[in-house]
Image 1 (cartoon, one colour):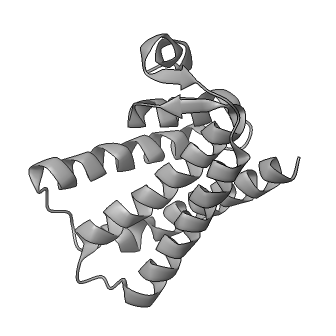
Image 2 (tube, helix red, strand yellow):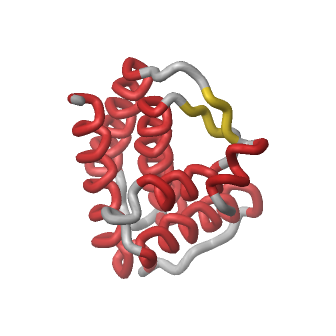
Length: 142
C-alpha cells in the first residue's frame, strides 16, 4: 500500500507526541530485554511475534514524533518506505512486510514456522531493529 493511500483512510494526523514516542521506545527496549533473557528457539512463533512487536513499536514511535496515528500495520511499513528510503533498502522493507504478514498468520491462524526461521533471519531482524532504534533516538533529540 502506498503512503498516500494510507493518508486517505488508515492514518490520522494528530499532535506530535514525543512523550508517547519515548514510552514506545522504552517498551521496545524492555521487550528486547525480555527476548534476550527468556527467548529460546523452542518457541520460534512467539519470538517472531515479539520481534515484530518491537519493530511495530519503534515505527509507531516515529509516527508519534511526526504527529501520525496508524490504524493499519501495513501503513507502518508504508511510512518507513516513504520517509526513510535512504536508510532502509527495498529488501529490508519487503522483509518488514513479510514479518507483518507472518505475525498476522501466527496470531490469527496459528501458523507454524520453520524451526530455523530465526537462525536464518536473526541478523536481518536485529539490523532493522537497530536502525529503527537509532532513528527514534535521533528524531527525539531534534
